[in-house]
Image 1 (tube, rainbow, N blue to C red):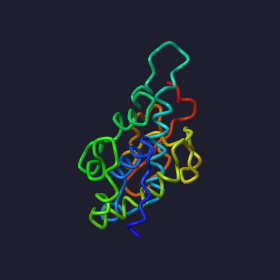
Image 2: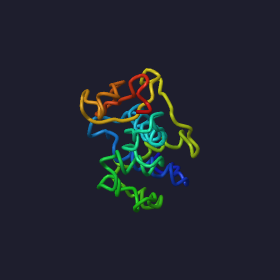
Image 3: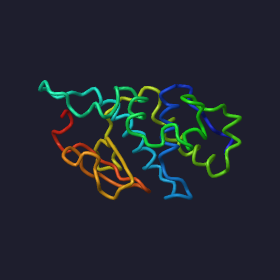
Image 4: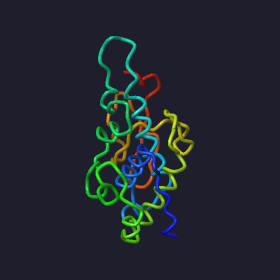
Length: 178
């Protein structure tokens, strides 16, 4: 079962794999949740999309807080686990470690990685954000945290769901480009 790891070769999917692996709950901490992993992945992709959406008016806008419009930019801006111990468990800086090395992970971490890869490989190398998720009421996740209901930007965002240890937030209607 563990030997069936299909590692993405696409650089963006490798970054997404690391971010979801590092951020999502494990069997030991909060329980494995496919929905949580998928929502984290799409929140990152949606952030990278909205980072480039600016208000019609000339003022700066807040979407720049999501990074520079790249997946790496969104990860650097919003993912607490970026370059942390969980990230480094499977990554050599910005590239996944070789399969032979990953297969030596502890069984729980290897199973967690396998479950993350199910999500990131399904997304594929050319995702088209923004993406709404049926599991979140057909809303687009744009941020998440471990609070029960404390949106990172309460004026613009509202809670849309919770999986495992994470609560997910979407823009309030009409607040996407502020």
